[in-house]
Image (cartoon, rainbow, N blue to C red; front, side, top):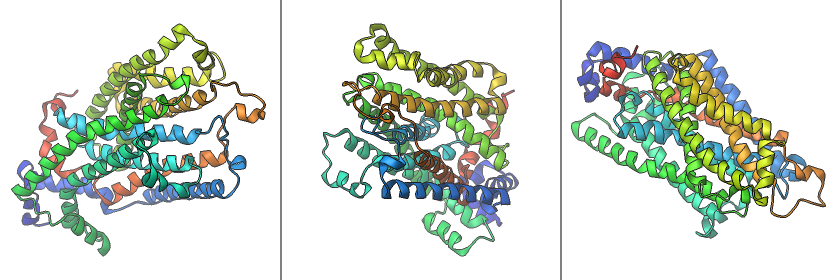
Length: 458
């Protein structure tokens, strides 16, 4: 690697010595440079799960839905919509970990930003897939675009999802341009098509002052735009429920309730992702215990905010206990769903609100365990929002088969759901194998080793 090639990345060259910069590049480009046998095995496993999901979807669409899935006239949404709400919530990880921290000048965000952005893109894409899986007649999907009415909440969701996907992709791509040039100049023994891809996607990046000025201005504008877009997508998702004639969803608190839960899930998901990348790619130098400490503090804050909106959501109807709400609330508090509900309350809200208050619980290993539990609880929380609400319609369920009164997802449904998770992880994994998962120029520009918040961390 020549000195002239290093100088082409002017910002990074100015903040690091030649030796330090080269070491950093080697370490952050290592996952892109080579894929070990375990990495290949992981990718192969995810591909197999995705193929199983495609086959399950083929069975669902070519055979009787009555035989392949558990959806009925009453529970017509089921686990697919629970999954949709979960992925939409997870997509807010980009807003919180990249946009909010970037605008508030918390410098420790820098190694985390690209991880958050690629997870956000993958999650919102799979949210759309979950919607298609839930639809009857997917061949008529284009009718929503050709003949959709703006009065319909589903059209609102389509508008914000498409807008959010587009903005998130742009926000992911623009900061990636200098890294693409770095890959083009630094990687070796890669296929010609891959090197050509780096050259084409970097758009002739040379690191001139004018290019850096345009790049950073574009990032600032997109960072400001993505926050209201991210909040609006989950608010509109909440409106999809709140605007229906279901007493259990008849709440003016639903928008804030959904958004606060999404931020909690976003922090927990980020902790899990950072732990995995840190261990798998040996990035301990860049994803440090300080980052876990900061994320643990954020987890506590988001947990208390979410607890507040949960109290708002359940206290008022439970206090009045009107006939419209009584069956639903009693089912959650003391009935068939009580075990799941109270487990979600304890493990998904109170545990992350209390345990990370102790600094020993904000170490990488214990905090990752807490975060994994929170992510699982968050999925079941979305299940409890969707399924019990559908199980208590205004008119009593009568003169129908017993199976219609209760919902449990079939093997076909759970295979498709598993495939959506595998597809999301596959997107993130493949991205990290072709592009640096930690931004070289952002870490260099931030001079992380010199920041007080890192030096003073003990």
